[in-house]
Image 1: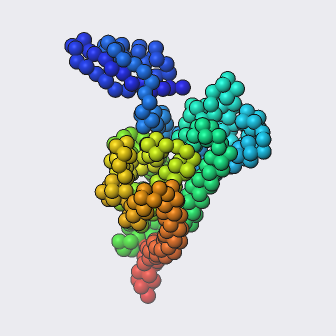
Image 2: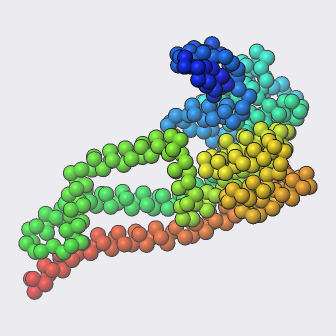
Length: 409
């Protein structure tokens, strides 16, 4: 497994260099630095949790997909039941490996079991596989091992991922119907342009009448699609691949994350989702025994939006300096007054996790209400677009026929 090493070195010119480097071992890290022409004076595994998380996130490729929240919740719930029933960790892992139908999870559980048998902690073993076990989970597990409350932590993790799955399902359900209708419209219009319109074009050419503008546009589109359908398909595929690749770059991630927060209606939905996730993640980590500083680092670096990650950085620094975070959250301009006020009350009363949980519950309800309104708003818009498209096609086909009837009369 790759680790992040902090180094200090000097170049041949005498200039000092420092930073981090990712390598499989200390010797490999030393070799990489020497290949750069550096003389290493200090090299050790970094304790910067943020650097470790960024390195793990950097290993994700275009085709990397996170573990579904539904599978994670089921895994944590079953693990909690087995362990709470007196089954050992190793036997619980073997049982879960046999029961799961998720191929990637099965393979990683086998490796985790081997690491635990060799004497490694469960949280540390899960940390070796961030593509399956998210940072939130393996840090909660590590805290549960230290505190002796692993069953409780696993239950909390299961509840957390169940709520994540519920939010994801609600948003996807609100968007499924519009996607289905739009997809159907695209397929029907493509079929008409490629197979039906050319036949009408031949018919109109034989009539010898001047074609109105809508008909000429429709025939032109039909001829273009019939001749260049493959180019259109390649163009859409290339555009999608380019956007996905751009999303994996640091610059693209910032641009697309900022755009996701500025979209009409959907931007507000994304903002609510991220605010709820921040409150829920920080409350879950805090209640699981993860210290507040690493918990804040985890929440910031795994929130899923680079704009929000940058907005949370001052709050993280405030915690490290022993200050409250409510003022910094308010200054970020991202968090609504309700959240900052509840955080301030939680800091004053020592019940920060409880207040964060209540804030998360509130915004979960707001997300549900907004997705319901979104579904009601999108449906008439989709049918309006469908009506315009169908009307245009009908007019383009019928207008030349009306002109022909006039000529006959």
